[in-house]
Image 1: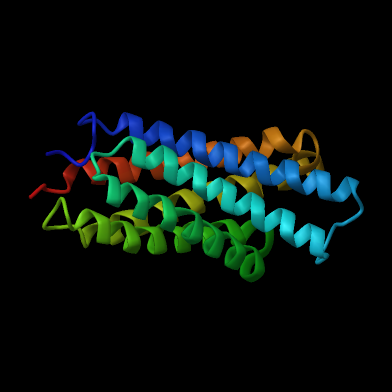
Image 2: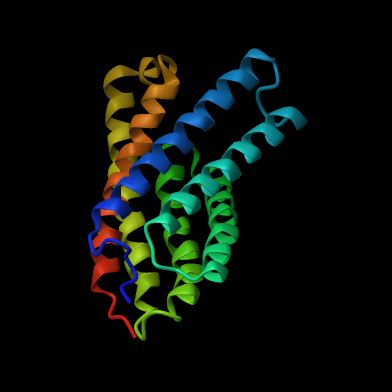
Length: 197
């Protein structure tokens, strides 16, 4: 049985594009709402809203990814439980450690490694080479973070705060789509190369 449901990397690619675009746009929208409510910064409402949005983004990513795979019901549940956790830990650490530009690269790298590790445990049921998934995922998401972080830096340098301010949901959704597209293409290609049992 193939790991990929369709035998193509395309569904995996689009799952990542849609999920990252949604999650980045959602976080941007939540940030704007929190600002409008006067709870910007390390307030209880601000932190709760941001963490909830990050978990929701990770849940959407996990849901869309597992829909493209041939997994048992138990493995689907494992995938759905670990994706939001890996996403939240990675993006919270990235924000704390790296700020706006470097934080994205740090978050994507951490997510690639954390999710790659947990997903490789699922893939052990389907491939004798499942441990390679950690490297595939780590490299794919790191490259995506580097490209998107560099693009974000260039756009901010050229356009200033205008790029981040108007319309923030669309601009962040675009950055998310780029992250998801690069990561989805690289990891999707690697996914097809994992030999099955």
